[in-house]
Image 1 (cartoon, helix red, strand yellow):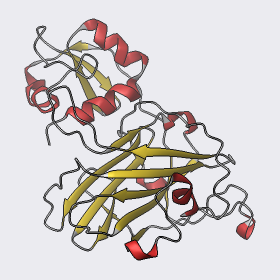
Image 2 (image 1 turned 90 degrees about the horizontal axis):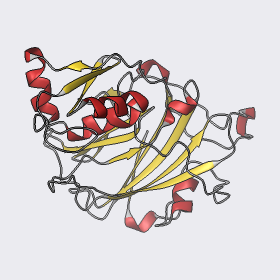
Image 3 (image 1 turned 90 degrees about the vertical axis):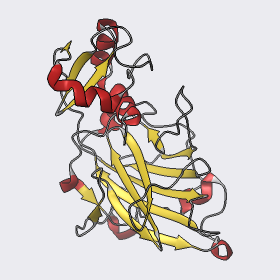
Image 4 (image 1 turned 120 degrees about the horizontal axis):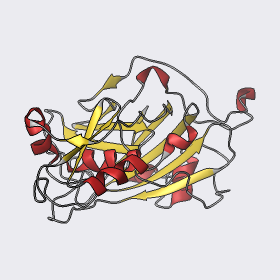
Length: 266
């Protein structure tokens, strides 16, 4: 599940994307160049029973023509439901689901680490496909200048029911020194949850509205246009500032639940 690689041992993982792919596929380099499901999503409804934790192997190794192999349990989970890896005093929680990839970095005591200087490379494969996808990770800020949690929004709901394997290299993680952190994970993607009828937020939603703080569609403060609207998405709720925004959430719930998670006050 995890690897701690020193700077002197980067034979398998150089600074380019193709090397990140080789971390889990010896035939990397034949990248098809397109990005699977590059969209926004949420991380609700994640099914940990579907985790597969073996390495992503050669399609012909061991006669596994899916390109993905290995399933075992026993891993730890973090506060957000993602898999938790330990690298010295650094903890990396990784959540892979139909919304894409989400990361939370903390020290050994659970204090959040700053991600302003963290960069990364993601190599991904989808069960049943020969294609190899690659992405770059970089920190982002919201319109108020607040750093957002490190994430790669992807609409993987399109491949629900299939396994998706990733190898992620993170650089510039505070506390890791000159070493690089590599996380590997394989998860069977669960379909996104159903969307309910939008309603006006009530007094019982006050805490949730405060926690989300910002409209997922307009990126403005909730309440700035009157009582917010609440859109149920599975066992979650997305709050927006207008009925028009609520319709946008209904049209693409995965995108806006991810935004709601991003804006939520930790």
